[in-house]
Image 1 (cartoon, rainbow, N blue to C red):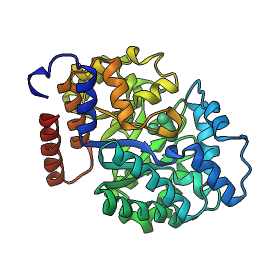
Image 2 (spheres, helix red, strand yellow; image 1 turned 135 degrees about the horizontal axis):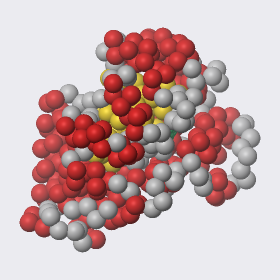
Image 3 (cartoon, helix red, strand yellow; image 1 turned 180 degrees about the vertical axis):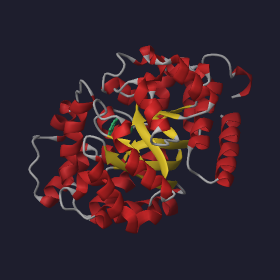
Image 4 (cartoon, rainbow, N blue to C red; image 1 turned 135 degrees about the vertical axis):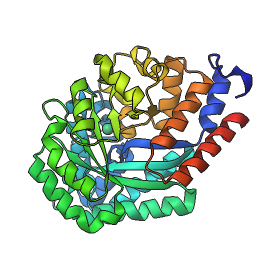
Length: 347
Ligand code: ADE
Ligand code: ZN
């Protein structure tokens, strides 16, 4: 990285640095890594009829105008995930792809209600993920955690029942999250279930300020005890909130290519990433649902670095932010921060 840290990066230097940085992924829906090829092969395995003639037709259908237009396809795609081997294959394919991008630690979201409603036991879902997480550690040295997300378009009673059903798997979970359609489903709706999860020692995160207003971010912090905000890009609409995010060093898990695909921003140049980062907000870069949004984590780093003219020092800062914002133990964080710094110095 040397003394050029403050200058805009040349293409080759940017590529070298992005490849070299050990990355932590904190906002990744494992069901959102279902590539069309795997969708077709699992559909064939289970005799599921897909409403697409080919892999190309699936990809062509991925033209979204908002979050809901994506969620409709995302939930439909999940129907091909049926047995433990499917959940294993899905997660192992993600880890293999993430390893190629230099991911060393990942905290994966999953949506249990999408599977239990189809009669698939939690043991099958979590068991398959756990098998893949163990293999990813053995094969690639990647560490990982699972975050159980409640679907916010469903009731809090449903979320409470899901948390109860997950109690036998408490040891497999690091935390709980909140996802799905944001508009009209404020964090306030889930206060009791988050209080119960936190009493069980689970960490809390929540999607807020993706399509929903800045007030949802404040609710997620104050009413749910969220330690990180997923997306959070609409914080800018409340300057006092931005000040608070900086003061309290609350991390945002930003997903730039997702924001582009779901029309949260009209183009990546218009994104507020660099502005918030330079204001002192703890930003991280993540891929959200990479099979649907056209890029994994390194693609997100690359596209953001180019469109937002990030410097080398800023890219390193983002990688460090992700390590600090993770739920890794303190010793592992320190070791990882040292690795990031030495990788950056060598790049
Ligand atoms: N579920 C999967 N991806 C999501 C996103 N970007 N926002 C809300 N819920 C989701
Ligand atoms: Zn998300």
